[in-house]
Amino acid sequence: MQPLNVGLGNRSYPVYIGKGLLGDIDHWRRMSAQLKLPQRLLIVSDRNVANLYLQPLQHALKTFDSTTCVLEPGEANKNLAAMTTILDELIAGGFQRDAAVIALGGGVIGDIAGFAAACFMRGIRCVQIPTTLLAQVDSSVGGKTGVNHKLGKNLIGAFHQPVAVVIDTDTLATLELREVRAGLAEVIKYGCIYDADFFAWLETHMKELLALETTALARAIRRSCEIKATIVARDEKEAGERALLNFGHSFGHAIEQVTGYTRWLHGEAVAIGMLMACSLSHRMGLLSAAEVARVSALLGAAGLPACTDDAPVDALLQAMQLDKKNAAGKQRLILLNGIGASEIRSDCSSADIRQAILDYTGS
Ligand code: NAD
Ligand code: GLY
Image (cartoon, rainbow, N blue to C red; front, top):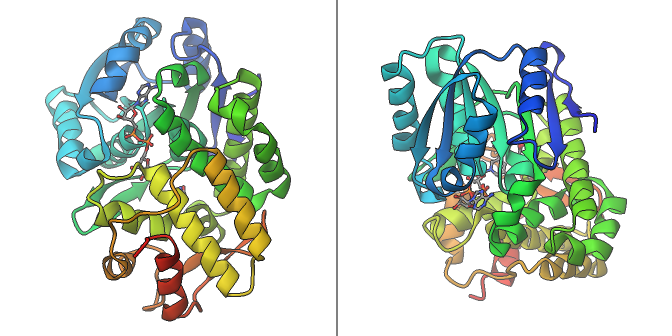
């Protein structure tokens, strides 16, 4: 199948989606010839993913000179220490500007490895091989890279577009169901903010998606990447429209931070955050109660949580103050203006925001 294109002028790149791509020697040969990939590669992965997929990838890349750097898995390790481990490997290993980083893993690895590639010698090439549903539909595309600071999520980072994204849908077979559900939160997000027909399709295909049925899965991944690529091509550095992709994330990031990055997966926190954003949209007169119920039902059908009972509202409000979208002292939030339409608003009242949080914190 033809790759999708993320259209960014001379930094445009292909997103390949298919079964078995990770270990497909011919795919890598063709792709590296087209993209003129360098010989010297640093494969960055986490322990879980490396145990499953490092060997087949190394085999597919056997004509390259590749070294590996394996990090501890998990959001709690998405920090400057992990980033330094990669930089140490690049510097001590004598890598030069013409090398490339291959990020093999979920969004955590993609974000850290992409950030290391952005910083080493002011930027070397990076190929993303996302192995979670969340990373395949979201984090591997668009060039946002970075790590967390103890005071807030993703506060340290850079825009650094990959030179290619290789999505092997077979890797999802080893993913825990909870992680599949978390990825579906971001898939549902695209329907909510951009595409009412896709949202309706998701309402009738959730069972197939949870069962990782090939055709449904490929369609959901492709449509998600298409929407993301379209928005990123129009607004790479989030001067405006790209912020829509953060629907539910201001609340979600705060939930993750306040609960110590261990209670909820990113996608789960985003799911609860999307419910809060829907409640706020309803309070602002933008979304009907019936539409809020549809979003809630779809997230529920995906098996996502609807409430966080261990995040006090004041702590969440404080964490949201550090959200990157805020500007001129104003909280900027993404609201739904009906299903499939979204907008950025900075006129939400503190009382409405507080109440929207309370609706889904059980406090
Ligand atoms: P993750 O990277 O922590 O992966 C989840 C878990 O699944 C990990 O334990 C990992 O080892 C394991 N795993 C990965 N692939 C596997 C496979 N195929 N089989 C078995 N186990 C596998 O989490 P995630 O949900 O992929 O990513 C979340 C991160 O992505 C967050 O840090 C979030 O901020 C970031 N993110 C970034 C962007 C962006 O635009 N850069 C967008 C969305 C999310
Ligand atoms: N996940 C939000 C973005 O990439 O902009």
